[in-house]
Image (cartoon, rainbow, N blue to C red; front, side, top):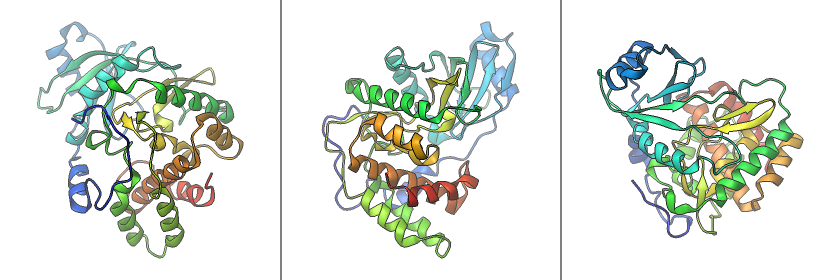
Length: 319
């Protein structure tokens, strides 16, 4: 796995680090395995018998990379659903140990790491359960307040010492790298979507996104700042979860909620609270464009029904 980033994160010359078929092959190691409550209970009984008496129940809203189960009232079990996400277990455990107590919001704490067993082929983890609702499910949120709170968290993330982190790369699915690593995917998606959107405007946004680079020293990034990975309690941001794609590099990838969730005054408040330059926001817009196009064109990820709305926001709101 890549180590801490010592230099800068310039725009790559020539081919992307993984291009075309190579990138598809790397990201394609995602055939899901079956994970149910019985399997989780068997793994707990075999490897952590002190918790065997605790009830296991799947959480209602599952993520894409992992399956999560409650273990009693105070613990959760998190299991990668495919090989592509398995390496993140060990990395995220180390990252959470470092991040605990360093952010203005809570992060999960890992209680134990599990090994493959009972036919399940990957490592997995037991964590303390964090109370709160995801932003995705919370009702009547003050989005401006949330934008300010999230901006403050991301400023703190960027301020952390980088020697404990990992240089952006394969382990982060190239979050934190230059967005041009996904140029082939963007252009392929535009070909598949030909005639259904303004392809020239998309190409213009992508060109703007890939025409600058993070010229400062590399900084920590979360890698998947999304409504399902932020918890709120009493109307305030209380926790950040799912650091599996975290690393050290360009923080532009952490800003996509400006288009996926915020609008109007909340979007402006988020921009001001984050406190980054215009070039970084252009790259962030590119990250949001890439995800919307790929999801819309292949339907392989969650949230496909929302992709056209996000794409509209990306194309009409340059920030």
